[in-house]
Amino acid sequence: MVAQHVFDQLRVRVHESTPAMARDAAALASAAIRSAIDTRGHANVMFASGASQLEFLKLLVADAAIDWRAVTGFHMDEYVGLGPTHPASFQRYMRDHLTALVPLAALHCLQGDAADPTAEVARYSALLETHPLDLCCLGVGENGHLAFNDPPAADFEDPLTVKLVRLDEACKAQQVGGGHFASLAEVPPVAMTVTIPALVRARSVLAIASGARKARPVRDALLGPIAPACPASALRRCPQAVLLLDRDSAALLGR
Image 1 (cartoon, one colour):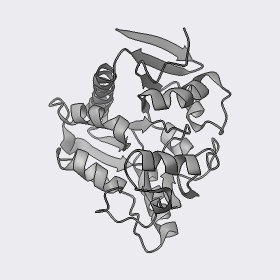
Image 2 (cartoon, helix red, strand yellow):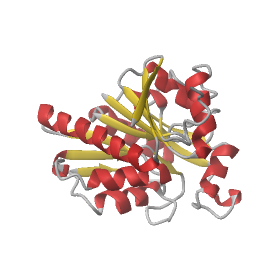
Image 3 (cartoon, helix red, strand yellow):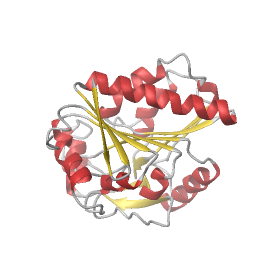
Image 4 (tube, rainbow, N blue to C red):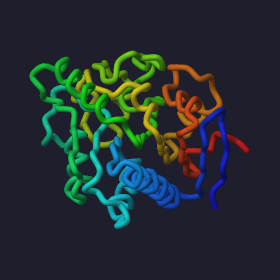
């Protein structure tokens, strides 16, 4: 049983359990990917990393109806200074949970260990400009961030496609809490991220937030002002977006 709501222009679907939410997310993503392939012969898809995406990705890559050879993948952020074999690298996450399992046409990744991060940002920006996204799969951070657009760096009118940002303390704490680093001191201070306007201009946007730790940012995103203080509130301006929640992440929304 799914409860459906609309907050401004954002559609929200609340499930009783995380597995039910993941199944719905995989079905919606599959439909968007297959529609793009049927229409244009190819799909450009941006994937998120993190614990909230694991069950969804596991179901998505198992979908035999998707011709993965017609899919070009992207990811949305990376730590500056981390190579592709580092356990916390998002490029490694994409390899482990995506390209090791399905034959994508290509996966374009931000190179965290690039010698010139500014040039790497420009390179990736150019790739995204020439590959309009059919689907962007998002998570919502514990501080409300989308990708690494933390509240201090989030800009709903950002003219850039990809940029360098300094991570705030709440974001660093989430990375430590997720087991990616042993301490705050180990978290790289700077990251590359796709900007909010570039994320939400995808033809379809699918956001996932699960678990009790996401209840406060979900409440702020849906019931608070639409403002960079909660970057995920930008989704309320997106009629092509859907936010999927489980019972725990929706707990502070009331009736």
